Image (cartoon, rainbow, N blue to C red; front, side, top):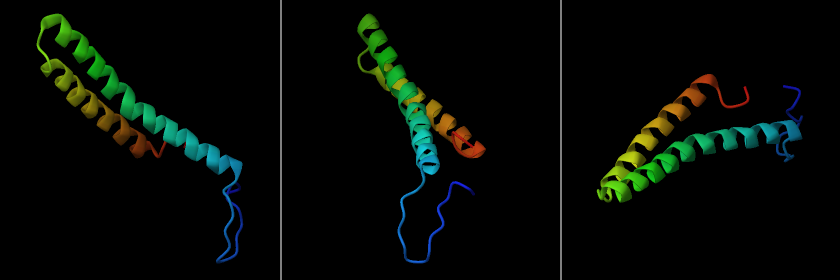
Length: 85
């Protein structure tokens, strides 16, 4: 609790650098967990759609599988309490 500023009721203070950095790290960790699987598998599906002329089915399947993977990654992150704790 050393990172939290002491405040009086009704006063507003900015969070300390340690808390702000922790929040930013958690946000960055969550962002990659959401976008890398989803966008990556979308692009893989798009590649195979062009190659096998199956537009847009493999791309949509890639998005669906990527979203499921992202869901499990976020669930595991929340279960352990965030990225930096």
